[in-house]
Image (cartoon, rainbow, N blue to C red):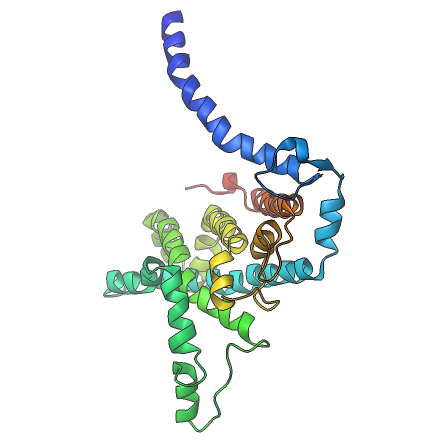
Length: 297
């Protein structure tokens, strides 16, 4: 028995050590960096200057970071409600026994297969273009004047809608997997007791999808934080306030912006820690509100 334990430890130790080096070390280093004044992310620790919470004060007092957090919050709330609502709607419809459900499921999920760069380019060039974009062509067809969808006042919502279009299918599949694991016997018993489809959905389907909601909300929170590509596609030259999100602010802070070589890796680390805390808070709240032990099949 002792030989078996030693054998297991000998094989597990290298893997465990590798995981600690690859995952734990970067996390610890980033947290430490957030309390120091550091110009370069690759700089030696001997060049670090301790400044306490000055980095956090700097980013939270920055109007650009405040706008970035506001944009992320709007993406998380408004986008989350729309994405999860449509994802759940499509999941319920596709699990109701309709014909050609495999075709519709594939069609709705298709945008997730396309590269985000290609998808964003399609929206920018062929949907939102002021001269020949599809939206303005439709408006002119019915006698209305075309709009500048990529103007400063509308660019954020144009970006968000394009992102929503590509995100619904992913969360729909997760909802479908949750609905399909609910035993049919429960619905048959509810039908015998006189419950209609709406009553079954409210009283049975939704409560039994709590763990799925927790998963989707957590994934959506992570996606909202890693919004870098869509923001840069809609503001390719220089970062704009209308499309600014925290991860882009982090990038600009660490590596400098167009026309500015000033870098601050310590403040960038503070942004990273702030975003990690945001996800942790969301996950903690989801665990408290949507408990898995409430689900019984």
